[in-house]
Length: 279
View 1 (cartoon, rainbow, N blue to C red):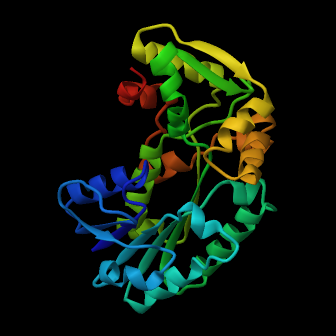
View 2: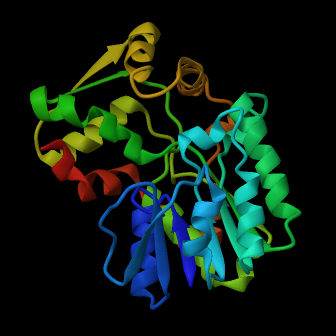
């Protein structure tokens, strides 16, 4: 049996579905009651309380660990989850980390994630670590304005990074959870090409079959909106990446193809599959 945390999100849901459809027994974990894909069992647990994971971990062979925002707080101890997993007989762990631990390693959340990566490596379990860059699904922040007035408002319209389809993260995670060939793998995951917000807007317009206007925000305007969703420090960190990506953040990684035997999906593909969110 495989346990998937964060099972109702952009990565956890397709991962749970893929594992269940492949015949794996899957326990989907989330903080609140939720519907899960057919074939999966759902357990409510709070990762801030590792003991609450015991019903989910009973009989599990592998764990996909995706941390919610509060587990990045200074007083959180996500390493306890790994201890709990090992105590319950889990033999394999796949950790969703971030490319930022490599490209911008000195922020507090990145330091904590690097420490957690080290805990995973030294856990005595089989392990894989996934370090994705930016997500295509972040474009859903624009869905309301596209629906209302066919406008995308974003900063740094002509500065891009190789954003990644969360479905590709899910497929790589499924491979790591079920195939011994990925033991000890550290995968940097990106999309197939650098794409700017203006180009993303054009892809959404193409998926809709209607024009969508791009409106460039100032950094201050963008931060004010982002602070409604995240702490100001994290908003600044994100805006730093979007405004001035490092050469490493611009690099198109070969690791999705190395893990799956195919190129990563494009943003245009993501937009076509998710077009109903923008109608």
